[in-house]
Length: 423
Image (cartoon, rainbow, N blue to C red):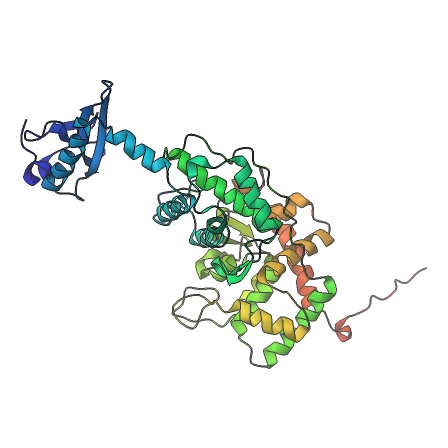
């Protein structure tokens, strides 16, 4: 057995078929393991008082030098000589992790891209910002000091009840500007998030089973705020007035486009010029909430894009003042809504209003789901390059209806049909 040195460690090559072990000549039980992937770790191997063989990693190659790892190995082997089991002790320490420590560890790994969401993709920064807000506002105050291994189903459902009752409500703003007011919806979503974090703890062998399994979430009353047909007409008048008052034309066009397409705010604002296919009647969404998608867009909505001031040096459909895309939509929308005498109008309300108009003109729930980009088996899920022609036709109908509400044809332009001659 050679003495582990930096030169020897740097020269080690992995075996493509199995783990490779090299043991140190100075300290018995101290060695290095190189996995087929090339990942190498320093470890100690020993026997417990009961005769069981244990291997315990003391550090990764590249993080520790051989001499530093050898020193740690001697300390662990000294514990063994005194009848202790360092590996079991480490496992017990991990099991004693608090809920606050677990949440911090989860966020750190998720932000580093080491945890995948339900779609098999890295968790989006916006989602993590929401998670962090719920953790800091609700989870840590209620359960942060509790040991993960001692959590029960009753603890978790009790947390949900406390959040719903407003026990953790605060005027503080959390991720993405969301308020921390509590309530049943926030409580249910927080419980779902905690269940996900506890499942992460199971995968990391911090706990054996997820105590949130079987937890019953409170019913979350969906928000039903949308603009009525009359409201859309009023908004259209306000948009026309805003155009004469030197309001930002990019923001005004974005309001019209979102209302006529049902796109989410960032889905629309992050569109690039080459994402728009006028001929096929669709836009290519590179990173929607449901992943990469092709979304049908009506002709009236596409016509709105022709009104957006172009910048030759910008790839964005809605260019900002700098290198990025336009981000000032909330402020522009607030000013236009105030001009129209409408309250509580957001980009999400525009999306809901699109769905409401789609329902008004007779679209089925499945068609509306497809227009909004929801997962619809057999419809949107299988179209990766071109949208379903039926959905394009539906998008044309809805967009035309909304365009007519925003910009009604003046009565003077209406030509009545003459009665047909008889006899």
